Length: 139
Image (cartoon, rainbow, N blue to C red):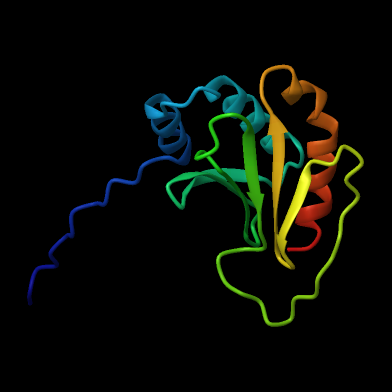
């Protein structure tokens, strides 16, 4: 009878470690604001988690990825809201309430949310939370 050979255990990096490493290495003039927005996003709904996807911090529910930081913008914190990594043929265009004018629609399934920097972040907190809650209902 052959002896079972154990495979070496894969080292799994905890999601929090992955995020912490990413943020520690991030060289961005709005790094503090990005960290603040990350906490707002995570606090908007208990179902939201984050991870590094598409080479930056992205957010998801158990259903799908839905928002990703646009770290190419150096003047303002921006998020790209989307409905996952794959196109959805059943998708219909929709609009969300945006009283602060933060959203710019990039297509029927994605929008860029520009939050500003510095004091703009706390000023736009409630509007961002409302956008997040409405967006995840579409997933």
